[in-house]
Length: 193
Ligand code: 5GP
Image 1 (cartoon, rainbow, N blue to C red):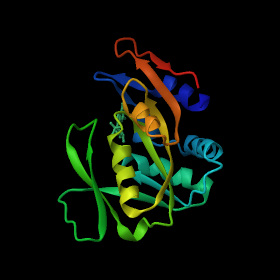
Image 2: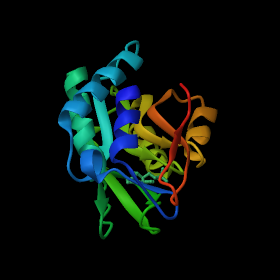
Image 3: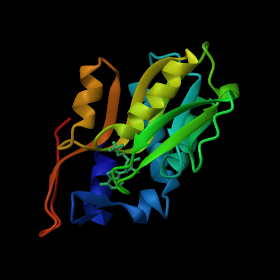
């Protein structure tokens, strides 16, 4: 999506360790007009899927997911990061290894909000090694709901998540795919889509 690529080029900051900071419009301050355009693009890309729910993960996925959900006219559920896991039979739970924080945490969703009749689109801000998305897919599978696809704002194409998810036959759409970036020059290279 050219609009998003242009914005990343303009306001994205390449950090050491292959981290792209997009705090000015996506991860801290949020440009909801841009999110609205992204929502419309996801709606176009997943037009054939009978999506009735969006699933994301706190915290940085929530803002985008809410605006995307307006294009689909469906509710958003966000998986919570559980500090101490208190599995009381009322939640679906999975484990996620954080790429940015380098630790493993539990994610949970109440059984009330994911059901076998649901057709779910997973939305997140970044796709790196795919741990966050795979954790969300675990929750969907545990609930008996149907995964309709995964929509990502920024995929880091030089990490394994995108390939892993596509290899499973999952419909994955990333609005911008960064194939390389240089923290010395700040240059960002996008995959042609
Ligand atoms: P994964 O689980 O795919 O390895 O990483 C995805 C999660 O890590 C995203 O939810 C995102 O919050 C965070 N993340 C991974 N790489 C980056 C990055 O380069 N920049 C930012 N801002 N977040 C990232």
